[in-house]
Length: 250
Image 1 (cartoon, rainbow, N blue to C red):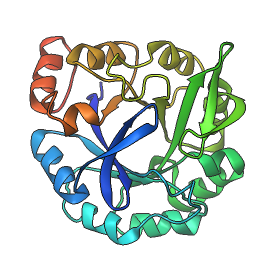
Image 2 (image 1 turned 90 degrees about the vertical axis):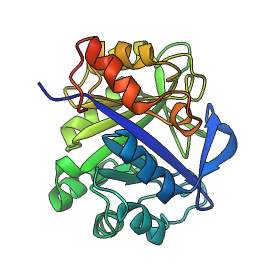
Image 3 (image 1 turned 180 degrees about the vertical axis):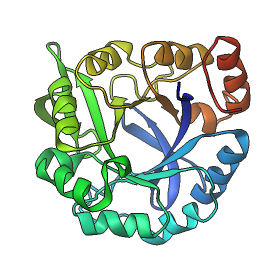
């Protein structure tokens, strides 16, 4: 059985790591390269680098910052935000990223997933799904959680698997930054539709939340603020998970 992964998110704005609540009220949390190295030392299995305003500002990711962060790490680095073409994805990987992820552009141009699969392989493609409950179903949002799409997230998860994605980064907008726990209903709904590995994101506040997510089939659990502000130690989290029978890398 594959070890479960603890993933740390570095949301980047103006070259700094930031964190908000429900994709709003953004505040600075530190230097990307320094924080990435710190989390690797503390036991993070992967770092996710998201340029949170690239899509909204209709620009590319800051490549020199990707390179700076990548050169400090030995654990995998996944990078996304504003990617529009396969060539841009190749540049990100050439600058040190192990995987790329896309959200907005995948929704606007689903065939891009298939193109990317041919050029860089499924294993390097993560589809980010930002979803919010609309009273009837979990709806996909794009442009950093600002644009609703009327797309059912469960159906979209099924489609991205068919088109060649290798993994899903699933974020609950409702839970983001609340520390109330991951959205298990959302996770369960997506799990019923796809066999892709899922990184669950949004809402982690205590160790038990990670355990619950893993029990419900997440392959990895992502958090930001609880690590940025030293509310949870990655090492202590992994020891706790091990004591509960969850296989992790210590």
